[in-house]
Image 1: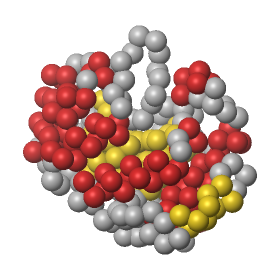
Image 2: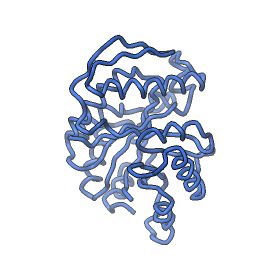
Image 3: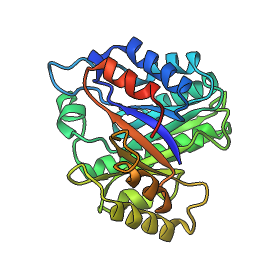
Length: 271
């Protein structure tokens, strides 16, 4: 099991300096990953840090900890821009970047308020096309694409990321909706969420079995479980139990503006 920090990008008054300080502390305390949410708008009174610029600073100040977005709503991004950003961050971090992708949670905040398409079917189509484009651009070979939503005349993108064949891709999905988990089975990991925000251990077992059915094996595949630990090994035993079900990463949820609380939790080390 690996352990990571899973922090909202509208936490800490959106101050990227505080995110950077927490990430450095997490690496020093032995955490394995530091992952930032990717929202563009979450309410008129909330300050939000850009996760990509913040992760660039973290990549430059750390050496071992994995970093990434959890999750980037690809349908509201230009795939060619994301391709450049991911390759650059992977090089800057010397091969430590993980890309989390999904449809995006709030269609009103991240989509509708900016005139973006809120239709779930269209967003799913765009997500699949974006993923195909990312893989093609990251190949370092001449690439063209003609889809329903995107068209690319022949281009060659370089430099490539350090990781081969590309940076890992984790796909988010709301269980028990099945389509996102079939998508995840084609990539490197899954980030399951519950319809009411909660997942039980039995749900993770069901996700693992469903992905295995479509993938054939869970070898070299990550499944992420999220939660808030208590610091009491007995009360936190569910984290160890999740590993037996196929979970490979536990990420600690951090929301709000209490920097001192987050810092204290991080320096104590992972559960």
